View 1 (cartoon, protein in one colour):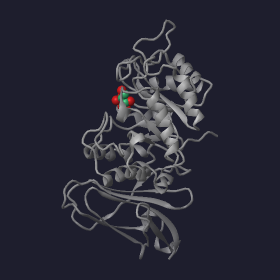
View 2 (tube, helix red, strand yellow; view 1 turned 180 degrees about the vertical axis):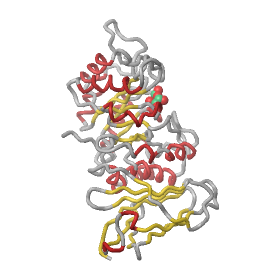
View 3 (cartoon, rainbow, N blue to C red; view 1 turned 135 degrees about the vertical axis):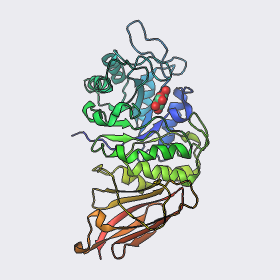
View 4 (cartoon, rainbow, N blue to C red; view 1 turned 120 degrees about the vertical axis):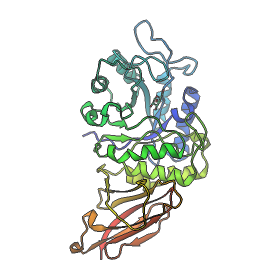
Length: 383
Ligand code: GLA
């Protein structure tokens, strides 16, 4: 059986938008390998929008822009594969892509054939310029069935921004991931907005189907296409931890050729990645907690996910902007199926600091300042 984990890799859009070419793509492939990112699991290199010419050829086929890709797409694809990586491309369910290049509407089987011929392993499929007469689920079914008949295994990444209740029908379309929101921006407000709908969507995911909270902004630091303001490194860690816990794909969006050590440390935290890539892709859930201090808003999140080896991943996130909204909470292991009678408790390991602590009397106590978080891997142990 073919089983996917949340895809990990790099996508050109967040930083480069239309400023892409074969040199950038091949250098980024080299960087994934040479920095050790590939060994951590980041194995897709995805060319987003703006790779094609504005017109199809006389046979109706998509044509790569010869200035950006002078040796064609297969050449880039072969290079990426020769580095042990996988190759992703982009198209759109409408007549045009979001940046105005040809979309695949009514060209689905032809375009799927081109992608297969070029050795594509991943297709991101956008939702701009779509006909109002055809429902979204049909548009995604068309391309999905075309890809599944293309003779090549191609991971299908739907990008309909959560519109038209995507999560209700996405499972019918055979897509492996679906975008839950509009585009991410590299700032705190955007992170907060996207995080708020994260869990509602993650519930609809499972084996080989993932709620895509959009490409990562870790390490963008205000640079590039979506670089509006930037975040500090604690906020980037929080972002990475939440995406990992909620089974979101982990597609890097910064310029990996110029990463700082801090960015690398975030992206390469193997324990966080292991929580994301867990074999069972179990559905994350909300833990009900007791309020200790007065909470002024609902910007606090406490989530857990059962892992395939019998551990739990537990994450607590304080998204409040009010400095006085210091969050203190108690919650009981009973909420995780570990009531008093089991004789068991949890050994909690903070996956960022490596500190460990055994839970006493079944009560987990946490206190978090605004814009901070905790992510634990918790092992079931005897009391
Ligand atoms: C949409 C998508 C983005 C990106 C651009 C490309 O906005 O949501 O992720 O692919 O289109 O034009």
